[in-house]
Length: 197
Image (cartoon, rainbow, N blue to C red; front, side, top):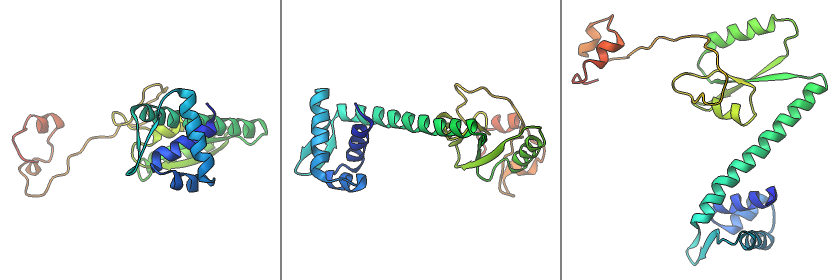
């Protein structure tokens, strides 16, 4: 399969409409329909159910949609990594650091200052992410390094180093029974399950 065919299929599968998919891709509808039909013939599988009420994915189509998205993501990651390697070879290296927007501001500033003071430090571009997005941008090649939060972020497959440990806090209304005990430990909170939080 060619990446062009995968892009075509993903557009149709996401839009569930050939006309909208063709418009999204910037091509005419007849060549798009022929390309999807040819893909189905080569795979020997019906990918889309075409009916009077529209288009739906078949089970085979759902599998191809999942796999095509992963394949296209991998191709895009390879392109990004290759471009960045070319910049590095041309003497313009950069490091992309992914961090959750609004979190770890003080830690991030300290890290960037310490790194900038190192001999041979290269430019660091900070990529601000939404909650839980850092691992994904690290995996797909948009970032070289990330500030992740254990146990919330998926660290599988990464080399990690603990930089900072944050304390846990519980925020309670002023009149709550637990708010009267200012030094309550997390163990004490979990031992009181019948108190409404």
